[in-house]
Amino acid sequence: MKNLFLATILFINTMSFAQNETYPLSEKALENKILSLDSEAFICFNTCNLDKFKNYFTDDLEFYHDKGGFSKGIAPFLEATRKNICNNPDGKILRKPVAGTLKVYPLEGYGAILTGDHDFYIVNNGIEKKTGTAKFTHVWLLKDGYWKMARVLSYNHHAAE
Image (tube, rainbow, N blue to C red; front, side, top):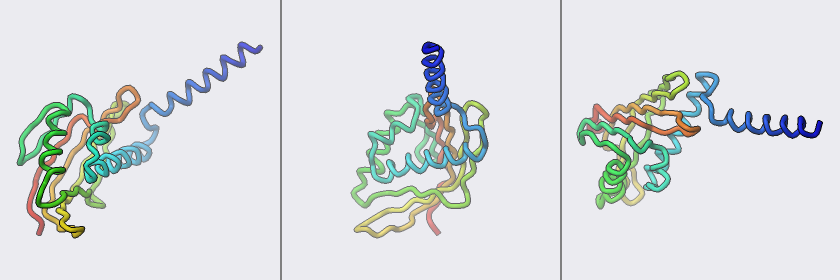
């Protein structure tokens, strides 16, 4: 009886742990998860916490940018972010998703696609000035219990109006 009890406890603990690593059961749960992860990732981007930011991407990340071209792998992406975003002597660049434009599409049992618009700002002396807008697409994968962006497209960049 004691062995059955221990086996049952072990099974329940294993199942509850596994549930934290599985694909969300509803589209709403998936949407909430992806939007939360995207927000967390870009807080790291906006604060230049690149050590944490890198954890939101696969090692074989593909990044497509209509002005900057293509890069493959997390290292070139982080270096470009460090150089172009976090070392800008003219001010800090911020990325903010545009409310009402974000849409999450399931890749059933595999991941999700997040699309939307994002605005860019430059911050000088604590004052934000909108500099541009673009569209984005993020392909999020659930692999080994972790959500990570595997493909990022940033396109249709244009100056702020």
